[in-house]
Length: 103
Image (cartoon, rainbow, N blue to C red; front, side):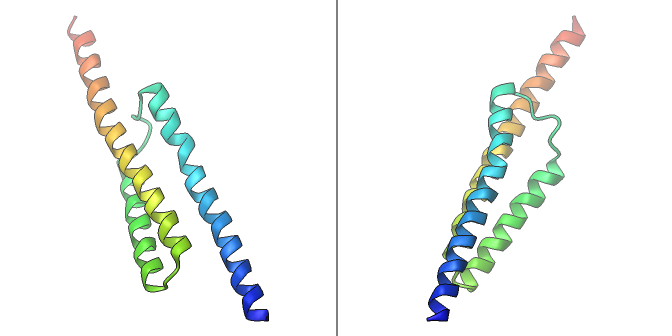
């Protein structure tokens, strides 16, 4: 009986933590998309977050913890989107700055 309660508590608390983890990254994506600027986001932060999500997903696989796997795959997808934004917007903003400075 107690194992079932503990298991359900683990799933519920893990799911809440997972949702909060994914949601905590979402505002940064929305802000980057709306402002079209990512120059204030460090590549070190992006890559360390990507590595973290990969390692946690691997851990979740070996621990057979679906909540950890899903959470970190979703965070990894968000980081990959942010990498795309950063590459595109930094390049675009750098070109715009160069053109303005050349005038």
